[in-house]
Amino acid sequence: MSDRLADQFFDAAIGLLQRVRDEEGAAIEAAGALLADTVAAGGRLFAFGAGHSSLAAQDVVYRAGGLALMNLLAVPGVVGVDVMPATLGSALERVDGLAAAVLDSSPLRAGDALVIVSLSGRNALPVEMAMNARALGVRVIGVTSVAYATETKSRHSSGTFLKDHCDLVLDSKIAVGDAELTLDSVPAPFAPASTVVTAALLQGVVATAAGALADRGIEPPLLRSGNVDGGHEWNGRILEQYRDRIFYRS
Image 1 (tube, rainbow, N blue to C red):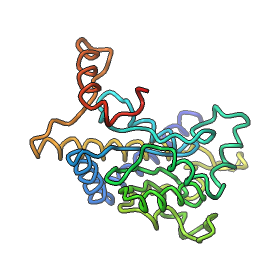
Image 2: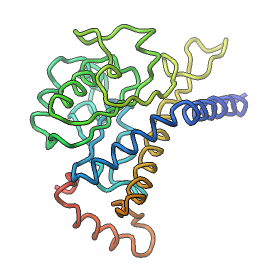
Image 3: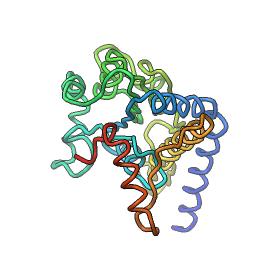
């Protein structure tokens, strides 16, 4: 039984990845171009996600094979399950005004780009993060499941979702509830695929951005693995070259 369920999950995840590849290709290209434009113009890159959505955001920060300029916009208490109790993070996502306080104390400025990851896109924090960032002149890429906007209600006072406040939206195609499998003998659906799909989406965007920079004759500021010979020296050069646009070193 366990092997069959694992196969079912893999099939579901592969199906979602194929949908994203086939249906979001133009949006991925546009998002990669936006990041490339930002890098070429001297801007900085940031990624934000709350709860498990933060996993995909963290996956593109200080990552071997990734863009060195991608910084994590961290909100204390909502980055992951390290906060105790873990339910506090979910509660903070619904607090009005928190995003404004975070942005006011962040290095984000006009000309930067911010990737906001929120599966549902319905809570106050990602909605206000996008609204306030764009008001600052920041370009916003939202990564979300558009299905939530038609099947659930917004928890923000405006009645809007993350997707309504972005320059570009990437739809992860995840069904409401984020669980791919069901069994008659199990009372709740299980096996979430949002992390797999969202992480792949963002890596596709980063790959597109690197290629777009190379096409313009600009060396993409990529990091190498520290576990290969010469990796530390390579990364030291990149980190020093772009030190004024990297914020996870201090």
